[in-house]
Image (cartoon, rainbow, N blue to C red):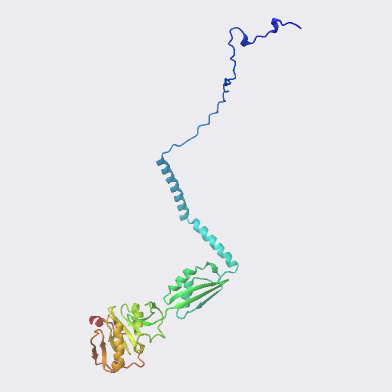
Length: 323
């Protein structure tokens, strides 16, 4: 075995003379922390453009944006582009339904007696061959009911191509004398234009406000049907009360009813006529405006009613004076 020579000894840097000796760790000591490795430097992000706005500036910007949207929408709307597009779409759809057979081919009407046919056609505003689904039922009914002689109307679609109209006409109950002409009126006071042929025997009402109160008058007269059938005219005095003409519009007995409690005076007149036959006497007027007395006026000519034409009553200034 060879002996070690000085050349066999290797002296490390830590074992050289004057070099600090490394500290030995004991079991009780914690291992020394090694220095952390330096982290690679992060690349700086490119600077971003940023608006630093105050709350008031943000609110103003939002208002400008909303205003721009509203104004642009209004411009588009008023230009009519959207409306034309909608109408064109609806028209194309209705034309398609008509091509499938849903078009007007028949129009039937029930209840029409006095209403002219041309007025119904104009109010209906429907044309043969037009799309039946394109008819505005509500608008057409409103136009029909606006006709003077129509009280109510109903329109029914009977697919594929029939329109059925049901009309309820206004029924004349009296003739209103206005400035020398005669106009039919119904119970609601509505005027019914047209010829009066066939209605000459209806009661005649005269004076301002007479048509509107005709229903009230006729209801009162109907409580004494025997005497009501003899009433030929009713004159509205001061738009407050009635004067009645019995048997003849010119020379018949005139009965003046009070403004208040006219029904009681009417029953009283029926009782007097039944018990005493006033119309057969030479009496031209009976005043029933006072509940406790009667005022009679005589000296009238005998009645001549057979074959007399419808007469025009004179204006009623005297009747207004007497009130």
